[in-house]
Image (tube, rainbow, N blue to C red; front, top):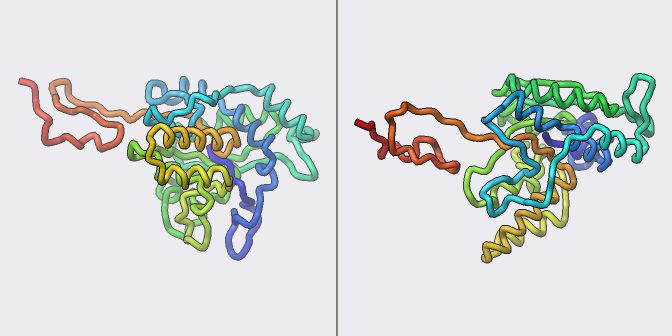
Length: 277
């Protein structure tokens, strides 16, 4: 679940969610931290995905050498209320919190998909207990994941406060996967919303670490850099990991030679498949 660091409701030079704006609610770290403890990962795991997933506190989960052991996830409505109370967000007569005339109401979008809509409902229910009102939006997958620069409902535009999708590395090296939080990758009208940083988060330490990792030859030092990058993303609640989804395949019981890989197609060793006599 991604947090938008820019304002989707204000248009600047023909674009909303412009890097020239800041989000009226999510720019407050307390709001993002509250959201991070309002995602009931256990419920999502047990009620929706089952063995197809596992809970995780990390954005970067694989390979094991770059998986951080420094962060933990928790589901804690009381803590969310404490965070918001301390930050000055007061409940109104309708139960929704407000501060400086701004109500804690957010639009949460994702693609149309039964498990995703159920996950949205779980988050919405918990958020309401902390005084956050969430409006749910679902977009047809072909539109949500479309790349047309004129499509305002695709996820790179991010014309919402929160959005949810599945992301994962396609190769064992984490460099390309982690560039989606670099400041020069911010999606914008100028790059036709092709930039990979759709949250529009900027962090100088993250940028420095990424550039250093690009040239670091020591594998241990390089892995430590990616772990720190992951920790910055999680500690700043840029994105809230919900589930580490497993790839699922099925085959006939007599099929041999599959040798599945998490980094390639199920069919990568197709020439070596054979039928057991």
